[in-house]
Length: 399
Image (tube, rainbow, N blue to C red; front, side):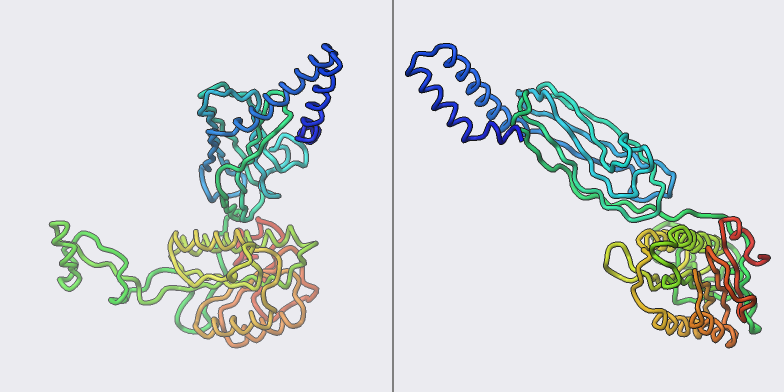
């Protein structure tokens, strides 16, 4: 607002008054108006040069973390010119939910702001630690740098840096046992490798051992390493578990706590399965925060699969992408493939109970976890567990 008061019209009016005062020979008025015009001129020129050759950049210590872990934001600011900056403000807008209570310094604010004064040819570096407390996928906008003349009459602003994306994974809780057993004679889903290997799926190489047959030797790798190397193949059958989130069973306005517990339950069970060499997939009818793609992940194993699943879960929102009928059709297809199904729900109605009853009646390995609420039915004709808190995940088999 100060800049508008001393705009071009004001400067022109002062110049006219200066001419009138000089015509009528009023030295005091001429001096006052002359000093005011000189101040305005110097301030405008200083403001135009204030942000020239000013560089500001930001770096993040990580792009993914769990709630409660520390994210370090490093900001570097430099003034590479002879003109000093009596004041300069650097503001960082942060998405809602990324900062915990009291982390911004201003109650209720979602901005990290810093003010400095910088002499000529100077540099500043500071680090801001924050600890996200809520799962989510956050986009941090560029920094806002503001400076100007010494009186602050003509502030100028520029954006610095680029958009940064941060994934805050769901919390992981300990899981010890899962009640997943096949109803046929193929055995239980322990996740151990089968004794047979698939020769068409190689997963790596290792040094030759006396008990290895010559057909396992990888001749090209042996020539490259100047040592006999053998092929390692994927097992011909791995236990597969598909984790399913029925987002339509949660209310997006009142079930925030149960929904977050449901996401954490899926992540915790996935970690349990990956540690036992199971293949894990994910399927849900919820929206993603990015607005693109679907909440699903093809089955896979290993740490890479777990990280990919955590990335998807960080983007999941309570919104519904497809009705339960569509999700139920995909569940029937997955069940026919022999994979186990672990379905996480909130409030079940008759359509959910009928769909799960049908799957269970066909001897498909199924476990339904009802999170945050107790069902109004005394008994349900399928394997069912109540999860009211992290402690209920410890032993789902004995719940």
